[in-house]
Image (cartoon, rainbow, N blue to C red):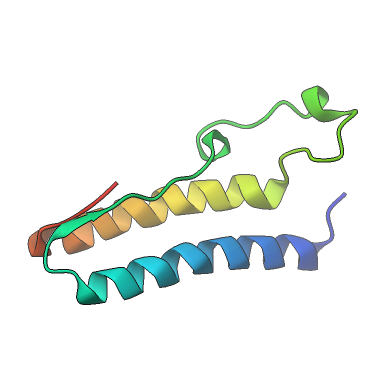
Length: 88
């Protein structure tokens, strides 16, 4: 059971990191590429039964953040395509 504050902290930290790095990079770019990497948990959900005996199971915040990173990447790709910045 994850406390709400821990979820918000994890999600906010991860997504803010990607947003900030992309924002700073695109400010100086006149073309080029940004490649955002994330885990597969943004596309599929881990099976919680697989991680019953492990302390380092994928957290719900990480899974939500991975999905958020995919959405942020797609949004920025469309937004910045006119400036010849490829984001994937």
